[in-house]
Image (cartoon, rainbow, N blue to C red; front, side):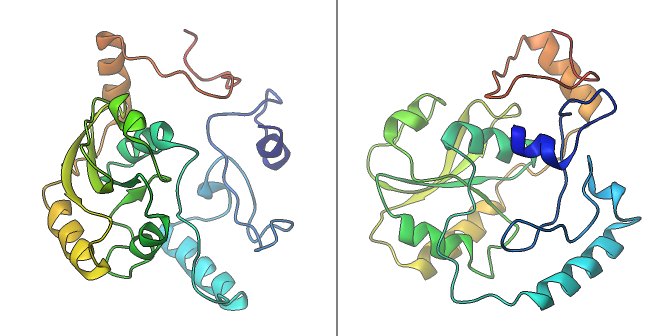
Length: 208
């Protein structure tokens, strides 16, 4: 939280609910004006995309990706996937190297969110029962607190087989976006609660 406050604070001098920054690979310099959203630095998605291409050209990749682009844990990954209206891929009981290959496969880029390697207990807390270790494609519920299995594969399956299966499973995913005001209203009516790891210091956020 202190790190994010160092990037951007709102008019009240506190952290608001979003922060935007594009950083050099060492994380020490900004490649664009930081702020609450990309609109602080760019007038359109096309302008941002062009800036990203130019920046990426200055820092060519060295070697192959070696990490899963995941959130802190399965709970937060599931919630983030729901926020982005994406299905989630998680490896249960091992298989991190396989998960890395899937996450960076060109055919799958932008089609799935990812979670770090999880345990059966992690998934059970979200109402998902798994019988064995493996790779699981998960459909988050509307509010990202529960989920259902779209497809699964053993950890011994080859990358090509899982990649094809994930592409097929993605077609069954409910990819409808959310209208923020309606989504918040529905959550309030249903009594849906989310306990954040960070305190809410956004003066424009919910009071309750």
